[in-house]
Length: 162
Image (cartoon, rainbow, N blue to C red):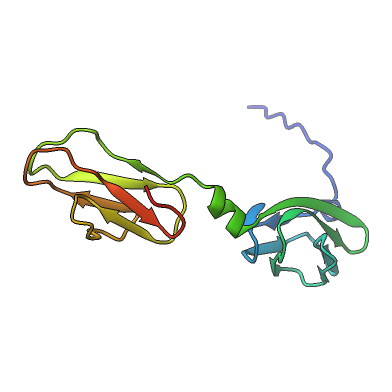
């Protein structure tokens, strides 16, 4: 039996930055983890694009203002890598989000019906009839009607009312 092996020239391990970022799309004040595992790394400089920097190998960081940031990592003062981070304003995002209800249009009396809130909100309040009473306080709810009829289903969040 004969075996042939093809050998390739490899890059020196120290010439490649092995860095990672936990998220590239975040809200203001949301924590991002920047980490580096570059072979033979001894020095790090993370420049966050907002005037702040760190010399730690692994960094937890929060951007204080919305915007687009170019984060640069320099390892051993000679190798560089760049990450682009988009930071959204929580208020702006919530203000522009559309909350909606996902549920069937028709159900049978006594049938358990699943109602799902679609969108991002922290508080959910479901009203399944004319009483005005909050029947559920979660993003999804199951409800059953005991009588046939047409019912108005309403969902309220901290920023919307439908």
